[in-house]
Image (cartoon, rainbow, N blue to C red):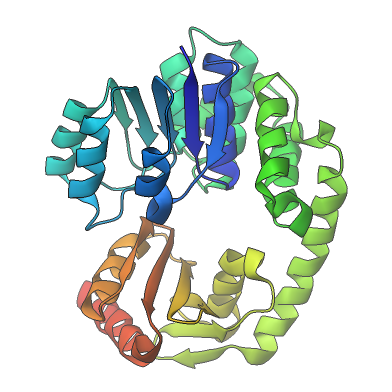
Length: 320
């Protein structure tokens, strides 16, 4: 049966995609994202479609369900982003396999599903993806780490997370090569050029910290860094904006022609960033979401100050 794997291009997406490829060898691996999922699904002609680590944006529910139900292909869906109870019911009806859970990585979810059919050592991929998605504090990951030298595991995970930030590994063909290497039993340090790319990325991240320290501003409980010169480092930029301004929330703002891309991070794990992003963005005519500790939004250019005001108000209402 011909199979297409649609996955995200971050570390969790790469690792969960590699586990899917291990379970379904010779599949076509394709990178997508929430805003592109509908169009990419339309282009899939395979008899089986495996979707991993792709959130369904609020507002896209109906058309995603429509295209899934209209496909003759088997749909296998693995994800950890928040879904409403009603959408979970609809997804179960539209998919051959619907595996969803929150507060853990997609890599962990898909490994658990296929663990009896793939080599035991593919658990490393589940751990790498969990580390990359700040989800390495689950009982599963903590238990798995007892089986191997965790220092080596964290080295491999960090090489993957940092290495793909550099321009060469931003290219989908090179990320696809990583997926194939990992699915075959290789590790990130064995991917040609990835180790040196990770080293360069670490150097840039320390330079980025100094840039943010000099340029970030604070509005209420929000630290803000605008137009960070390293687009691939939006997450660290947002975190450093929180750190250097001693704010509860940090946001990195990247300007597009018609909108702003907002990345949001916090040092306080009690704050549900995905809810903040979704509510504040919706109030200014944008869209937002993500995970509790790593979220983002897309908003109209002229609505930035209003967006920040809503973030501050929502934080106050949450008493956080």
